[in-house]
Amino acid sequence: MAILVSVAVLTIATGIGIFMVRGSGSVDASIRSTGQDAYWLGHAWVDGRKSQGDVDALVSQLKGTGIHDLFVHAGPFADDGTLDPGLRPNAKWLVQTLHTALPGVRVQAWLGDVLSDDRMDLASTATRTRILTGVNDILADGFDGIHYDFEPVRDGNQNLVALLTATHAVTQSQHAVLSVATPALDRLPGLYLALKLLPPQTQWTTSYLRQVADHVDQVAIMAYDSSLPSESAYRGYVRSQTQIALRTLPADVGLLIGAPAYHESKINRFDFAETVSASISGVQLALAGRARERPVGIALYVDFTATAEDWDSYRRHWAP
Image (cartoon, rainbow, N blue to C red):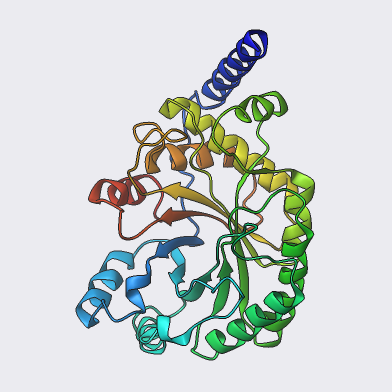
């Protein structure tokens, strides 16, 4: 056991060193947003806690930025796949108000649930059918799309692929967008195996990401909770995630890199390392010398924890 632990520690240290190297070097500050960014918004926007004054403040914050998609938490699904309309009494008002104030900005319904043996089971045909019923109902509220976030989804899960296939048929028929939040990609094979010794980690292989991407319009990679202990290593990690995704996704699928505008230190996250600024620098390093042939943006997570410093980093280093 001691030998295995020693090998794991050495592998992790090597991986951290590799990411630090990838995160070094000067950043091309001319690489900026092309207006394809996103912002996750909490449930308070649809349950009655937010007023017109809150919307006005949000609109003021977003004007002049590259935010194109708002992921508004409008669920979650119940474990059996039903979606209670009572969770979103102000949804229609919010969507209409945002469409008027921010023409061109898409308002997507952020929906999901916990996947586990005692929670939601996507293997159930009945559950997936009820999910689709909820999707139709929420699109009737005026949302421009569906943003799925089911967690955890293990690599190769074909039940998610089946749900995405069916949902995409619905969204395409209604001229809406289908977006999906995904875990990080398998970073370095040796590092991935070593991280198995840490608290549960979910990474996807590129082959599974490609399979998922074939059935959606947009992918948002949750590029945080990396366990990396420095900004330079995290910057290199984001660079790697972005480069891998660019090589993997179909050309017509939009790519968003999730940036952690939240401030919680835990066993797989160091707040001083995972910053909005480091996320942006990592994306800029990945895009250096590359033609901007597809939509690539930053997705800020999340509105109720984002600070003035987070927004200052976004505006100074990335906004158009």
